[in-house]
Length: 131
Image (cartoon, rainbow, N blue to C red):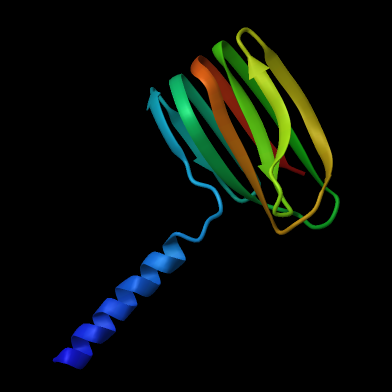
């Protein structure tokens, strides 16, 4: 009986450890929020968004290209990425702006995209694609 209980506790602890291994976490409040995160693409659209949203994309090898676009009616958000263990700023989108660009030379197996609001954002869309 004790052996079974000990094994069950150990199994639960292992699952909790493996489930919480991501480097970044999402924490946000949102209204009319739709998001998608696949292996090479990610997107989000919202009526209201405040907080942090993290997307995890798979690299296509060395010298990966990340294409991105953003549109925001109100507020501002800072978008960063991490592909080598260091968080780097990618761009900032501000009220009334539309952005479409790309970043080249990303290396690493996993690319994290981190969206952090600096002000409550309204009526926005953002998309990211690995090429």
